[in-house]
Image 1 (cartoon, one colour):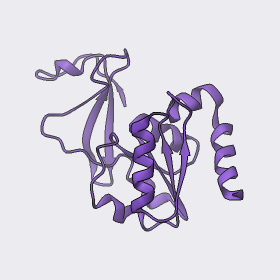
Image 2 (cartoon, one colour):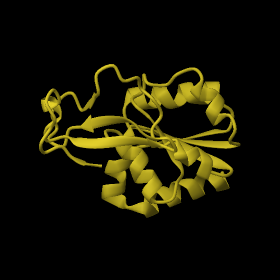
Image 3 (tube, one colour):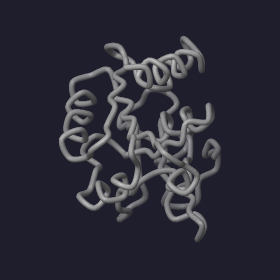
Length: 165
């Protein structure tokens, strides 16, 4: 991961953006580019690239639970605090065969962004998967913004609340 400073010819639109590699056991299979200056669009992909799950290695590291969140940055944030997470690239980025992947886990934590598309995304996952536990971020927030404001403890408290319930 890094900031694109000197893009190769034809990739000038990625200059100044964060490059986020999609790494699998086979190596880097894609790169997405995220704005760091609040420009639109927020994310850009390589021409012709398909959307895919981010951080698929978490599938092999997870035991009895896995987390799903929207976007790469939120996935990186959860993984950094030892919550095995896989990212869906946007609420419209889920493909039908992804549900089968997540059905291997008795508990699937869905960290929903604090907006209507995020809440709808989480509800849709709960309809299609068993064992879904939804953790919704406050209005206007996402995983990363909550981590910046409240740290790891906010997430561990939320997970403990769900275990007790």
